[in-house]
Image 1 (cartoon, helix red, strand yellow):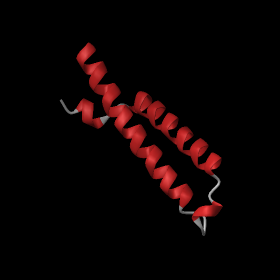
Image 2 (cartoon, rainbow, N blue to C red):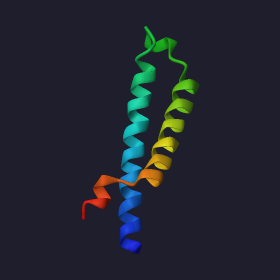
Image 3 (cartoon, helix red, strand yellow):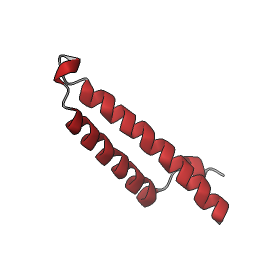
Length: 68
């Protein structure tokens, strides 16, 4: 059971980091110039996306973990 939990946590964390990065890129991409980026908005939106990713993984499971 512990091995499955550890595998789930690692997979969920990887997914959350990918989601965080994708959200950051998308949020930064909405500005015309890099100097106009509202970094606090980028950080908060990205962090929220990562948290939502983890909660979704908990609620629905992860195919990477469930395959085995």
